[in-house]
Length: 156
Image 1 (cartoon, rainbow, N blue to C red):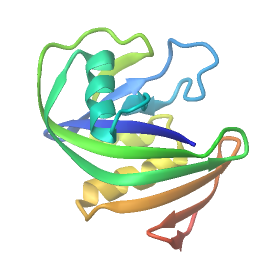
Image 2 (image 1 turned 120 degrees about the horizontal axis):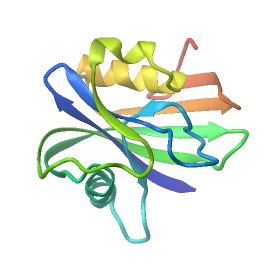
Image 3 (image 1 turned 135 degrees about the vertical axis):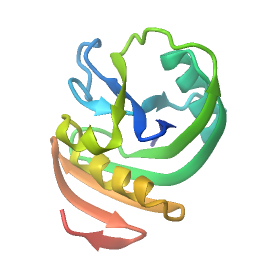
Image 4 (image 1 turned 180 degrees about the vertical axis):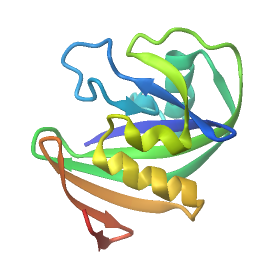
């Protein structure tokens, strides 16, 4: 099973988003996502989110919060546990990202951009400011076929 992280850096009413347009054969090609990536051997989710954010943005997180665990089940990829974070403070200066274009996007405009259907569910949960959650998302290809929040089914 794969472990990964995803982080949404918050600046007022905006998130720092990554438009995945640079890598060939990218499962996230042309989609807008937060920053993050796969955990390396021996890394905690916190270690991973710090490393991945620094690698993709040049920024070092100084205030971040573990918000939820998202389990991805797909007919095209192994099951993945994604550790979801938000961050409100960092140091450093932005650098170009090798995986896509970074941009500050107003939260209200996010849903109009190409993104995974499940991302919209966990963005809603983040913006509601609720407690730590466990979200399971099941995909058939790119189509979201099922979602469960804290073990309870959601309408998809």
